[in-house]
Amino acid sequence: MSCGFSLREWPGEDCALATSLRNSTALKILRSLCSAFLASDLSRNSCRDDTTVGLHTGFRLMAIIRSTAAVAGSLSLLSGSLAPAQTTQSVSLAWDAPNDPSAVGYNVHYGTSRSSLTTTQPAGASTTATVSGLTTGITYYFAVTAYNASGINSAYSNEVSYTPPAPTPTPTQTASQPPGLAIDAKTSFDQVTASSTVVTPRFSTVSNNELLLAFVATDYLSGANTTVTNVTGAGLSWTLVQRTNTQAGTAEIWRAFATSPLSQVNVTATLSQSVTSSITVLTFRGADTSGTNGSGAIGATGTGNSTSGAPTASLTTTRNGSWVVGVGVDFDGPLNRTVGANQTIVHQDLQNLAPAYDTFWVQMQNAPAPLSGTTVTINDTAPTTHRYDLSICEVLPAL
Image (tube, rainbow, N blue to C red; front, side, top):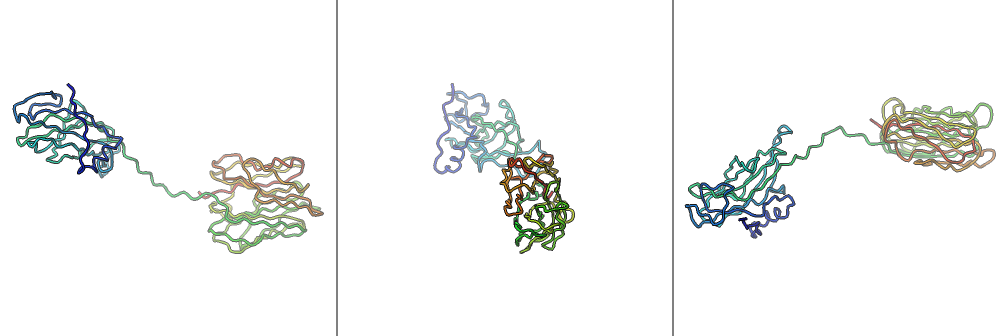
């Protein structure tokens, strides 16, 4: 016949452990147990009702393993370092004391097969025990017997099983990754009367090792097309990155690199002829610091121009996380740009005073391109009937 005992409610003095065990979703408690009189020849499979076996007649003994759940206070990993495939763990067990004054101690029996609990661990008079040396991924089965002063064991309690889980791996320590690109300072100035120079307002930066890019767009008057002949300012050395001046006017990008923060500086572009113009300076934190004067922070460059059409220029990125930005000039009229997808106008100057009727603008991708080898386009969908020059470049993050 089946045994009708079940896990009982814990008394108040055992409430802390009992509550955690009873509420654990990992409980593997068998809901019934077998009982038998104390006898030396009872096996774990010999549970019978109304059985009398000579010794201590009338003394009924039962033991219950309450949990092998992995809950706080009941399961812990052994310290030490072993081969990953043989990582050892331990499990804590608890059971009820029998209502039999002849019981003086307990033995925990366990093994890797239900039919063969080959290992015995004495628990003494305690109703808890910790079994150590268990191997991750192997299922173990546990039962408890009580014994009297003569060393005679009871039948096995109900059986529970437990499979030690693999420990959470320790994350591999890697070198800290440098931060990505970010814009620090931005400043612009529109030269609305003809001049051979254009100067930014004063600006400051907050970080060491910032890349500075100056974007200059100009009108054209006569003779050879306009160029930027020099850029100075902030005590830095400036170098041309990209020039596009196939149509009337020029669109140019110049670079410099500041190893320490700048305070209240300005940047001046000198032009080959006295015309209207616009200058924008952007500073980038997190750029590649290699090379000289920011050379290591510039990747691919691109250029575009047309006598008529929607402005466009493309390049292929050379590093993950790089950022593409460009500057353009529309010689034919002051019209707002309609930027392409995932792009932003950084600055736009609509020159509408005789004799200059131009558009000077700077635009960029909304965010860095995640992957190297990506074709990135700086473009506008309108206007579509004006001539334009457009220069773009890739800003590289630190490695």
